[in-house]
Length: 499
Image (cartoon, rainbow, N blue to C red; front, top):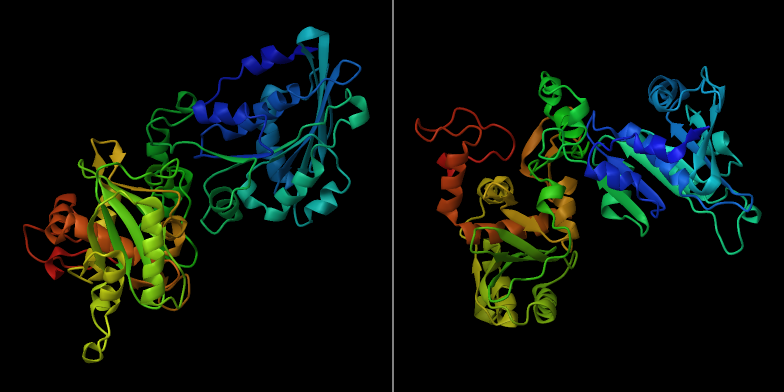
């Protein structure tokens, strides 16, 4: 019989993210997302047995665990996952039993000696979904843990079903009084497209008790599993690959939506979104930036002395909100969260300066809001879309001291973050994935708060700050020394000669 602790100690975690994932025994559901070659499969293999060894001891001194490994098809599971599994747990080991295989479900029963004279009996089943429903494959199955291998390739119903079938083994009658069987569902994946269910469930609306572990990209500082890869593994892999492929499988970032191209592909949630809700820095003023219209929105910004811009808050009341009600909401937000902070400037959509019947004594949108917050609201100096988006883009790509991002968003700003990730986008001209993109961002639920952010960033950085930074950054199409560029580049590309 193998010694369980010694076998588990023989595994060297690919890195700190993988180690934290493998040793997380408390999360009901945990997924790990990483680049190709990041060591996710081996990490999940050992996570399964580490969890098994942590199961409560039954009345007879045996630690019992039963799990299932689920893949989109058994054929791919047998060629990839089982091959990795057998490298650590050989199927011909004399103390272990293996049945099945050859394009049909398989079962591997492992037995380990644990400290204190206990024995671990770990049963692992391997199944492929194929063209069947998960209920048809696992009807009546009861276990301790489950592993979705390449979880993004399966329907979300697989995860839903698996969470129903864990915490059912061993039978409660075998355990000491008052002890319930624990359970865990884990999954591994490469970064999928933003439309995949994983983004919604693990980034946008992650339930309590679920954890999402994200490895660094293959070329990032702190990349995991490099010790077991050729030195130029990722550099050579990039050759001939499309940008979307590199983004997902090497950079480990969610891919673009199928329904449009993000305005800010430079946005990286791990870099630009703070770990916790941001609080305003004391004794520093704030900037209020607003977009008017039938779906008004606002952002609260705080520029720091070193050039970093904190996006502290957003206010998105919805469609059909007039200036008076919008002003009430802004005042309530300022009173609740920023009562001691001076307003450095309040800036808004230039179009909001017009439209009122001044002869009848009506106030414009800007004047109505300014009167409510007791501060003059100034119109932004431009409404040029390319200049506005470029201001934000340059903050996203700027690193302070080579480390800290030029723009940091509080998790409180959910609409803004969703827009960065997928909602604020260039639309296809014909609603067809193969058609070209329009040259201006789509007007939708995410565009208004992003317009507000752009006005604020421009007010902080200034027209010439954006132009100078764009020229220094060598934006595509810029020829600062040679005259106007010859091509417009991508949708939204900024051109210093057009401002």
